[in-house]
Image 1: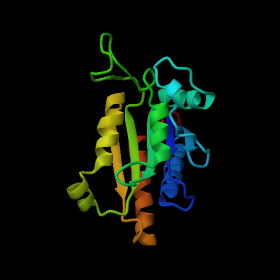
Image 2 (image 1 turned 60 degrees about the horizontal axis):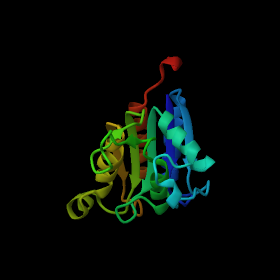
Image 3 (image 1 turned 120 degrees about the horizontal axis):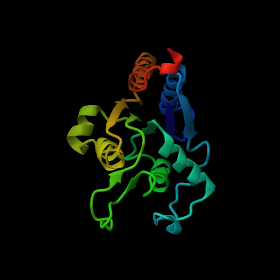
Image 4 (image 1 turned 180 degrees about the vertical axis):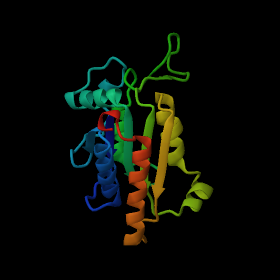
Length: 202
């Protein structure tokens, strides 16, 4: 399987980076072809330009490559921190520029954009790993867990990805080395279960 892994965290020593390393190792060990992007390391331009908005717009080579990769992916893994209930601006810009009409979704004939789009993504399974410094019960009770709604309903659900596995790891700032090791083991288990060993490796 072709698995697309997108990391959105600017700090190399972050637990998000450790999670991405663990996920990529597991996926490759299971025989999958992994395309990995560290958006900050690659200096991805997150600004959506006006001329890119139309469905048939001509996009630059970098965005075209990202669009092809997500369209061809059999599975998707997204890793980012919870910042103010949202992904970092860098990752939000990737969403704006890559989750495009004609690539990830389309509106049916006669629908001018006011209806519910039809998902176009080939991938049927996605994983979202988040890190947070907010206790899980408070996140749900006070804030309503906006990242759950964003990824499951607003993005992947509308783009045809039906199986979305999301896991938040935290509280990061007070975590111990033992806790982080267990979380990395959990991340590897989740990735391995969602994308098991390919038939070619059996």
